[in-house]
Amino acid sequence: MDAQQDLAGQAAIHKGARHAQARAPLDTAIAKATRRLIPFLCLAYIVNFLDRVNIGFAALHMNEDLGFTPAVYGFGAGIFFLGYIAFEVPSNLALHRFGARIWIARIMISWGIVACAMALVWSETSFYVMRFLLGVAEAGFFPGVILYLTYWFPAATRARIVAVFMASVPLATVFGGPISGALLEMDEIGGLQGWHWLFIVEGIPAIVLGVLALKILIDKPADAAWLTPEERRALTQAIEAEDSAAKEVGYADIGTALTRPKVLALGLLWFLIVIGLYGMGFWMPQVIQGFGLDPLSIGLITAIPYFFAAACMVLWGRHSDRTGERRWHIALPLLIGAGAFAWSAFSEPLIPTMIAFTLATVGFYAALGPFWSLPTAFLAGTGAAAGLALVNSIGNIAGFVGSYTVGVLKEATGSFSAALLFLAAALALGGLMALLFREPETPRR
Image 1: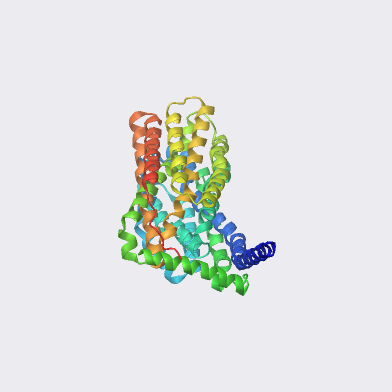
Image 2 (image 1 turned 60 degrees about the horizontal axis):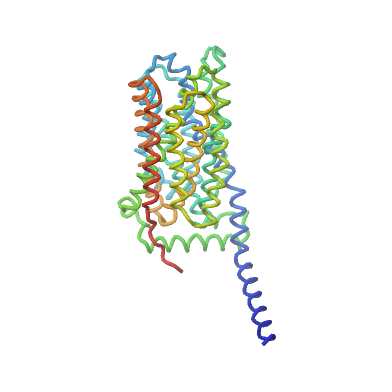
């Protein structure tokens, strides 16, 4: 009996060793891809988000210099998304066809040039035109990177990887807020105002990174010379197996990906999240300005909520991957964010207001990693390219609707209270939607 138990135990040990040996190339491939690709993509997204929302800091002086009302500013900040939405699906399909390396580089160089040219704005019309063109230039970057990550990282690791990548957004404000505030102090240097320098200095890195993308990015694991043959084979097989499973569900072609209710529902959920995200990004500097602070102090204070958000979203995404649970990992932080926005609407002193803003920011950012693990789990091939772009396009309509609505509410009421309640309602509805969402079943292997 003892001999039989010993033999069974040895067999189990050998089986476990073979399983660990089989997993080793995949694990090391993922680790290498993380070290090689994620830092560059994070840096690129920091620059991307900063060039998109630095208008919030520029507005502290630009609005007065050019005579823009809150409604004019809100419309101009939001019209960016109309250009972005119009070209997003075609851009992502082009990335899928021509390769991520070339297409992401093209996007970055284009938006960097337009971001610098924002310094040429002199009127309402020129403001609207340049913001629209910036949206056209940036179209496809975010969903393109999300699609690119599906080429490299299996679904079981994706919430963590996406959370690390999207931590770039709060980090963009952690570093960009103080930098933007300092650049606003450069009035009359070289005959330019501080907001002119802000656009020029913060636009140049996108051009530089776009050129570097041609050298750093690799389209797919099979082409990566920095992986061993075993690692390339293991990672390629893992990704292809998931693509095949997704194709069996029926989300692998453009037609179904653009029309399936599950994809459209995720687009609506992303719409509600984005209302909070850009409502905070575009308007928080002006809310804080109401406390009588100078631009540099505003920049330093706005960094606080995003510092905590960056840390929490990575930890929350890792927890979602470890448990395999997605819906509550989206809903709970959104509901917390909704409560915090509602609190901020009735808070008058600076410190309680910033505590509320910090909780709200942590809430909607913590939901991002688990959220983007949902569509990437059942979209594949050209269906993934089109579907991810569609979800992001629907969501980015909120960038226009939310920004403009906040501006109108501020102008109509003379305060930000009604606008903050509007943001709270959007996140609360998003939390309820997340709880009702059911992910399509993927066939088991």
